[in-house]
Length: 303
Image 1 (cartoon, rainbow, N blue to C red):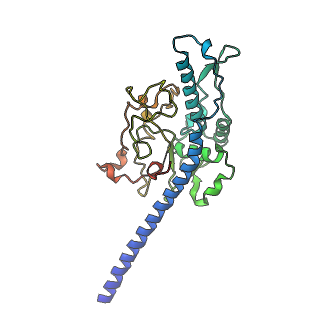
Image 2: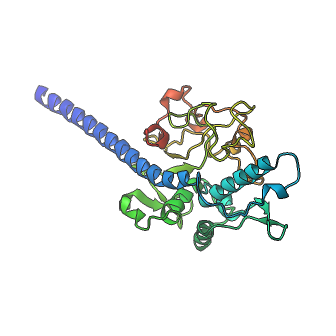
Image 3: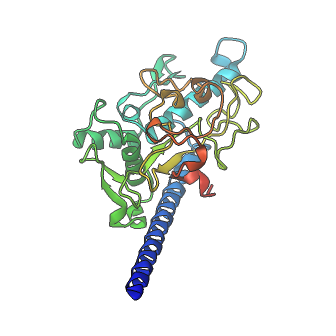
């Protein structure tokens, strides 16, 4: 009996150790997957610092008002934000909504709207083919948009070679849409900007400029609210399956939240002017932020 008891105890200890090792392996695999997604995404994200804008800027001398250079910088900022919204969507409305940025055509002198880009047109066709509409279940729209960006919005044609078959699966709410899955088969979510998220990559540092507004036309680090540098947030729910970030359900964390998606809005003005710490969802309230188990790109240290 004593021997059997010892063997039973050893069996339990081995099972617990094996389970812990498997969970650790799942975490490591998910971290590596998110790191790959981050690396691919950042190439596109950083390109907006020097991308040619699909608008024609008029000569400053043709503009009325006291500060023509400021007006030019404002047009550039609007165009960059609109370009990023169309090419790096994180919600259905980013794809379905037409461009809202306008500019004065220097040739005709008329006000025209910035055109859709090729990437935006491709996303729109993909959603239409999958039967997705603006009213479709939006639970994992960020995850679906991330898959579209990685597979259709990048110049690298063989991008899927970076992933295994188990890394990709259908959206649980929209089975015709594909998304990247973590090791627990939950969609990996995506936010183009997450101004309410404080991390080593995106610290609450008022000396950093919002990359879309380098000239401070919609605010500066000394303004109230200030602007900050923003980076994409790619995150897994982690082992417990809860997305412990209140970003997906909070319209305040997106300047492009419908119905007003004007890129003239400073993302931080909508977010209350402050960068906060990750917020625990009410469905998984533990009382302390230390229990958050999300796995995300901004903690991995890649930039």
